[in-house]
Length: 314
Image 1 (cartoon, rainbow, N blue to C red):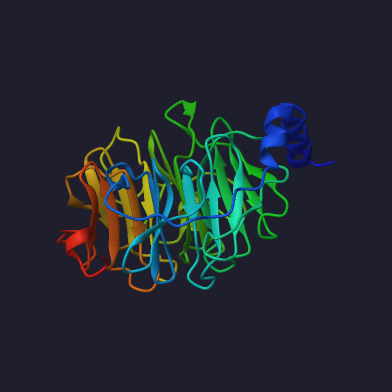
Image 2 (cartoon, rainbow, N blue to C red; image 1 turned 90 degrees about the vertical axis):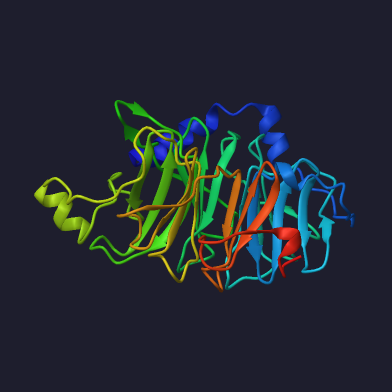
């Protein structure tokens, strides 16, 4: 038995029966409800599903079809959402109670997709950039878990990153298909201590550096000077379009930040903090955010913004 397998089995033994039962529950079928009473000013997760938009709000999970909002299921809002441009209608959602669900019909119905997960709150989800049947999840107080069969089974793959003398939860997670000398596929992680990343071989966490990551790792040289994200701020949300991995957005308390070189250099796109963020996988310049005033949309990658109700999305 490998150390990784032993650790995963050890984690599963400590599951409470209550969480195990909860993890097997199937979500109720959806029902329609729309109108101005929906609390879009408190959105905590956003995602594009094909041409439609998903929003996790205090009213639950909502879907916008270009004309109006519809509520999907009489359930509380998920912590995290994950979709992929090549699989319209397939949605993964994770909850604070540790349950994770999959929908194959745009949220009309759901099935459990959390077999083997330990029941800890799911902080972030992402599908692999070039293998959308592979899903990654970050769990509170835990590390990274991976499913390679559309959520049917899960295995523990990586401890939490150790930064500034302590382990940190992964608050946000994206799969970045960027050729840097370590296989090309990375998981970028936002934490309370900043941004880090790990290749999908899960050998070790590493800072985001310019050039060939393997050369930098072997040489041990200090990274070249770069315009990094502000020090001491948590990176609460990361977002990108899978086919344009060099264009990465990050939400921090100091606002929304943009990198056009896969996270090496950053510039502030807006000083306004956001509670949710999504990038259109078809058009990476189409960005949607949520803050205390509601939803805002940009059609130029974050340079200018309009309220969602005033945009052509609504």
